[in-house]
Image (cartoon, rainbow, N blue to C red):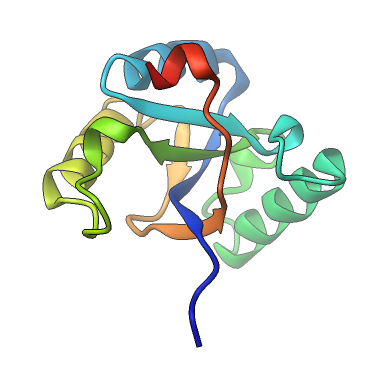
Length: 127
């Protein structure tokens, strides 16, 4: 059985006041931020955003209650991090975690990556 093509992403809850600054910090490193609410792969973005945020907050049993209204985003890796069909290099992981650690007061995340259906990168970014 072959796995469907997917995008490797980190799922992160971001304080809305820091979302723009985080996105800019990641953009220069060829990392892409996709708010779940507006991600092109979501049929019902607002509903998926609500469900994802609720699941993340509840599974941490009070530790993430401050993030109950924050924005869930997927952070994906740009083409510069990919080498054919090889897994992401560890440096890609370290770079992402380092940036997220710099925003520690405004993000909640677990150091793990998951997969979502391919996210289309706009052509001007892909170049």
